[in-house]
Amino acid sequence: MNATMRKALVLDAVYQVLDNRVFRILLGTVLLLIFLTFAIGFREEEIVLLFGWKTYTYEQILDTFDLPLQSGIPQREGMIRMLQMLFVDKVAGSLGMTFAIAATAFFVPRLLEKGLADGLFSKPISRRSFYLASYFTGVGFVGALALLLVVGMHAGLLLSSGFSDSGFLWGALTLTYVFAIVHGVSMLIGAYTRSSVAALLLALLFFMVNGCIHSGWAVKEGVLQTEEMRQFLAGEPDESGEEHDGPPVALVDGFFTTVDVLHYTLPKTTEAGLITELLRAKITRSEPDFFDPKSKLRIQELADDTSISRDRAAPAALDLELATKEAAFVAWLDVEGAGDGVSLWLERAPTLRRGGSMSEAMEKKLKGTPGVGRVRRDHHWRRGMSARVVQWHDAADGEARARRVFVMAGGGGLVALSMAAPPEWVPPGADTASLSEKSGEDRVKAVEEAQLEFMSKQFATLEFDQGGDGVFRTDDDDPTLFVKNEFGWSSVWKYNAWFSLGSSIAFTVLVLALGIWRIRRIDF
Image 1 (tube, rainbow, N blue to C red):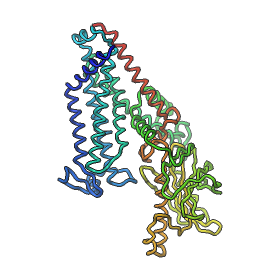
Image 2 (cartoon, rainbow, N blue to C red):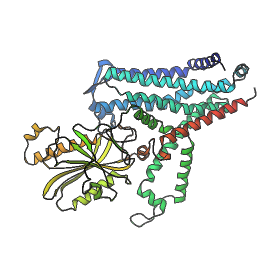
Image 3 (cartoon, rainbow, N blue to C red):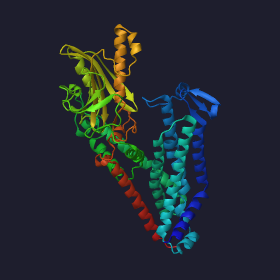
């Protein structure tokens, strides 16, 4: 097939799209979403609507709509990211996908209409070429709209709000990737039924059911990590000695097996966003200042006045040893000007998963230890990452020390960021003028808060090698969190990004091959 024929095929498919009313609705929706990012200005203290027509504080919006902003980031940034997620993931990813399928579902049925097919297939162009031209035109059409959406929104947020997140542009790849899979299914259905309505409805049903299957599989994987489920599947009694209530183990195990088979067989559309973020991180990131391959802990850029040191011997005792024998030393973090009395280090427990249980065990052990006081435990958020914080004072060799331990869970197990320092140590960056005005217990509390803030800044540099920068939302109540934390380029095969990508592409290629096989055997 020469270049003229290829051009004619593409132009014919493009004209079909442009002549479709659904395409115009979809284009209008995209332009409306872009306009809203120009019309809504996110200032430092308030939100401005329609270029100054109305203004609202962030507190007013949050209180009125009870919005669940991600902890650990400023309100302004949280609101903008929520808007991006709403427009791209919800509106474009769900409603937009529906419109995109509707705008392209007629491709094959129209191609197979009696009069039109006779004329087309009498030309010296193969049916395979017609079919693939329709497929790639549909993918290109949605890809162009997705790119228009994210570029337009990025420009609107930059000009109206002064906010720029170049990583947001990668959202176009996610939308295009998912549509490419569903569009192949839509065309296959059209080839077998010759009905635009059937192609539309069944493709939408596939899109929804497929997403539910993979989301259910992620929930199942998270549930299997709980001790209660392990005991149930093993037929062990619970802590009270009574047998577990609920469905038979064989039924649950059979259901899990069915979900596994469907997950591994079908294209993994729900993992498209995870793959996109991993690609974004792989391409845009420079080499990190520190990376521990066993725990997958990454420090892309160390905090100010902090450096990594591996030369010194590990501490005599590790904090995680308070609750487990699995503790291992990772590296020292040297703080410039802190002196020898201040120690900061990283350790890991590779086989453990839940930071909450670990910190609770540490707290119980500390409260029963002589010479230990001011023990308390808290939950801390920073840049979308979550940590359990254990704090206490102790006396070693007659010397009082303030202790802080941040325990967080990642793909390689638990990691702890630990600090030992004199109780009166004032960290770099603290407000010394304000501290000088305090005395007694007030000064003790102020110094503790300054030390905690210093540790919080160190914690903010930590991330696990799963895409980084708060890519995968950290929420202890999210049952899919385990899969998100395990997902990566070098993970075991069922959490492996290459397997997810390869199996989804293989499914799409198979669907296209079946569609081509079908139209080759239609006798007009």
